[in-house]
Amino acid sequence: MEAKDRIILALDVDTQEQALNLVKMLTPYVGAFKVGMQLYNSCGPSIVNRINDLGGRVFVDLKLHDIPNTVAAAGRVLTRLNCFMFNVHAAGGREMMSRLADEVSDEAARMGIEAPLILAVTVLTSISQRELEEEMLISGMEIRELVVRWAVMARQSGISGVVCSPQEIGYIRSVCGPGFVIVTPGIRPSWSEKDDQKRITTPRQALEMGADYMVIGRPITKADNPVEAAQKIIAELEEV
Ligand code: C5P
Image 1 (cartoon, helix red, strand yellow):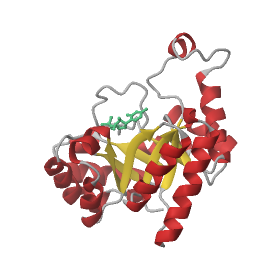
Image 2: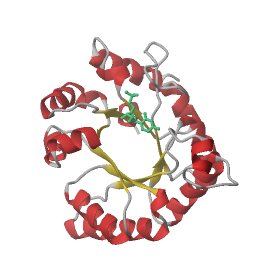
Image 3: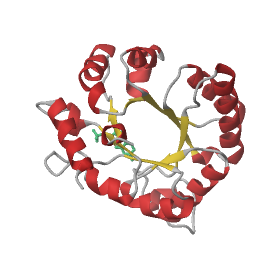
């Protein structure tokens, strides 16, 4: 994979105009654009078509979590939208994930297109051990162990990979193997602001830890020159 293809630019903006300006500027320098609930709920699913029309691939970050039938139906629709990847909460369980994976692959085959990658979200990085135990009522397990066990369950259910924090990459890679797709946020080049990210990793470190893709937002979008920022990250990833 080329270095630029590893970069997924987070389009954390409200309007189609802001999003498409970033897409027009950055399509040659990144592999995909992440549309999360902010932009998707503001613009609707047509934002995916608009980005595709400009030559960009789209990661639809809506973190599906519902009964198996509903999630599988949403997955079929996202497949028809021709997104590159989308995600689902592993906490929804095996049946939800395997029905989703089966129906997405059937729908893609019916359409004669490549199936989108489906990523599992395990434990959100904002959740602490205390919240896991006292609020989610999951006890007797470290977050890291739960993350790995849900990653394994996702893989067994036909899910393509996970979104996880850089700290979890090594464990997940060693248990789930080289073919499992790992996407990681929390990336900050040494020259950029940390913003509200706490445990950060440089793009180069994330690559060396075994990430396939990295989600990067503000270090590029808020840079004085976003193209130059993306080019610097590509150069860092290409260093031998
Ligand atoms: O601007 P920044 O590079 O911090 O953007 C990171 C993106 O990755 C945001 O869209 C954020 O919601 C997402 N993300 C994250 N940390 C997680 C999961 C997702 O920063 N654990």
